[in-house]
Image 1 (cartoon, rainbow, N blue to C red):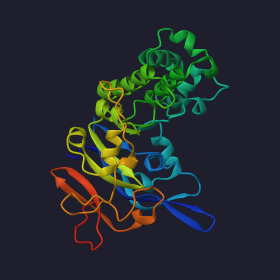
Image 2 (cartoon, one colour; image 1 turned 90 degrees about the vertical axis):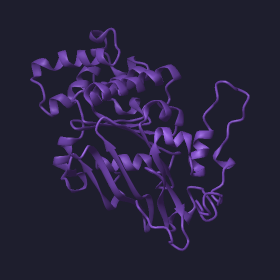
Image 3 (spheres, rainbow, N blue to C red; image 1 turned 60 degrees about the vertical axis):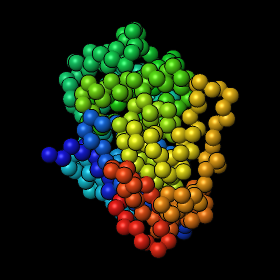
Amino acid sequence: MDQHILQIEHLNVAFKKKREKSIAVNDVSLQIEKGQTVALIGESGSGKSITSLSVLNLLPPNGKVERGSIIFNGIDLLKQSEKEMRKIRGNEISMIFQDAIASLNPGMKVGVQITEGLKYHKLLPKTDLKTEALQLLEQVGFKNPVQVYDQYPEQLSGGMKQRIFIAMAISCKPKLIIADEPTTSLDVTIQRQVLDLIDHYKTDLDASVLLITHDFGVVAEYADWVYVMLGGHIVESADVYTIFKNPVHPYTKALIGSIPNPENSEERLKSIADYTFEDTGYEGRKFAPKTYTYESSSFNAPSSLVEVEPLHYVRFYDDERKVVAIG
């Protein structure tokens, strides 16, 4: 029996501006099992959010999926009509955006916003909506749900707004939650509360989570499997233990090296510039021809994912295509 809740295969997403076209997501494949948290990690501009927006068919007007498939529970989402996608969004797949302030309606009370999904998908009779909203508010950590229910977003702090958004995201008990940088602009204590809430929901209902982040510290604590993304490509993937024990790609090493060491506050944090993709120390293979910057066209050159150890994949640049591509 297939345990995958989501399978993305060979996804290409392009954006057109006037007569120019740029590839934002290039041959991306990833999968999420039921009950699993998968982290998609990389710097801004690497293609993480575009990948997630493709899942829900929410790309900007100038964006287009040119190739690939996105299978959710056996259904190819790329072949669904807008009407069919509206039945899936919020109901079976929910998304937690990084900017809850912009995502909440400032003119609508919090309680009404929480019940919108339930009302749209007709999951509860109208008489039970408020009771369910109060339970959700309590579930995401509010000790005064009755008071919060009647408040407007502007009356709440940033952390409280993000918890409201989580309540909205889990209201229909989705099978998959896409959390796109869900703790941006929150202090460390609130960040942990928000991530714990998502993790508890996943455990309680055996749901799955696609966690999009640039923070390997978050990945270490919450993820089961990791995909590292750079320049629109997946450049390394493995279970979280293997990624930390044996990172192979220089970009992965750079991201891990940027995690602060609490035991040595004077230690200089490493940056991506401390690593080079011209390192040929891994069995003579190259990671990229000359440069590792996102703007470089070198990432359009042929490259391949190689299984360097069981279930641990790394993308190498391959001038002569001697290595067989597996993803």
